[in-house]
Length: 312
Length: 252
Image (cartoon, rainbow over all chains, first blue to last red; front, side):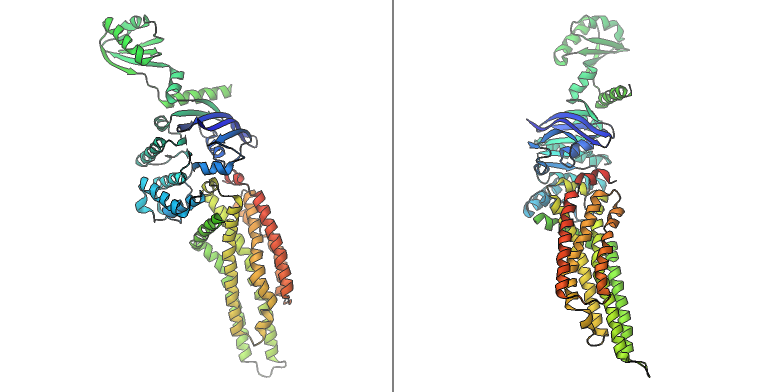
């Protein structure tokens, strides 16, 4: 079941088209990563889906509610971490959370309980009575995440949740997002930190005004670079290229010093046969590893090709 | 209405924690109170020690002067109710934008009217309190430093209606105009200044008080009713044209 569906969703600001005919489905319980360069329209998309700004055209449903016609229901069903934490500096952490909890229709007692729960989960309970103005950036970010979750939303939008945080604070936030994922919430994450997206996201949407590609990280890699293994030998690999090419399932093979890079369709089924063929041909094998491409390579390839298309 | 009280409570807490804002709100009423006190005290000492060999009745002349001074200051105290709420309302919306708190606030299921009513009340309540408090001090000064009968000519039933009913109602107008301006203009200072155009009209109304015109309670009630209608209409227009998204996307 999809918790977010958009069809030709478009938003323009005067002559500038920020989001162009976005058609997208996000399954319930998944972590969806929105990747794209600055100005790609990620924040505008999040704002539209959180019913903060209206689309210029197109339709969308969020948590089963129609965007535009049922905005208040959407606002009750989603939590949002905005680009900047946006907390009241003169109020304490606890007061900030209970204030927003009540705005999300929790009664005062429930808002207090939820505030305590999330402040404890995020290691802020000891400082609950301190004014937020004295908090570090990491603490503010954690508090803003807590605020987005107080009303137990079905969908959580996190706009660059670890931006500007030190590694320790970023890790705390990421672990917390993993906890949310294990609770079955749908999370829409926008980030520029690609290893983070690779670690956290079930589905990645690469976006530059238009949606360029959407898929799981592994399928994005396979689609662009294919699948395969790297076999490190004890001797020069060139001598074994023909033996490998003779295997009917091998799509491509490249030798580089003692390394053979072999493209396959089915790593689990075909790798043992490949290893057996190399041993039969007299090769001594040091290691066999799946070929790994980073999400950054995928991203640069896709965004770069989009840029080239635009220039043409 | 719960959300109105919730936001109002938060707004008032924030306003009263901001010393620069409180100082700027208090300074003008305080100056009026001090000036009125000095002028009335000076005339009071003349009343106690009339100049020898005066050609005219000095007591009557001083009483007339005190009535004139009283009429002038009672107008100033009414005018306070115009500029104080505009200052707070401008801060209230613009301040949220500057501290990036408006986006998470607008992401909650709060209705526009609830948000604007809370923000308007948070601007009106301190303004009304400041007006009443400073006018109370002025009345005390009148009681202490004027001849018997003077206070009755200045603080008339009509004036009390203006103070207790019209002034609170009038605060709604600059607030509504500031709210309208806040969602239409990119520059927050322009938004705040936009509401000052209403000063010209309302100062003209209040200046009649300054010229000593005796305004009957009935006439004061009529002014109150007219201002209430104008204020409510402007407020609903403000709600209608308050564009959540233009504030989020246009203001930098």
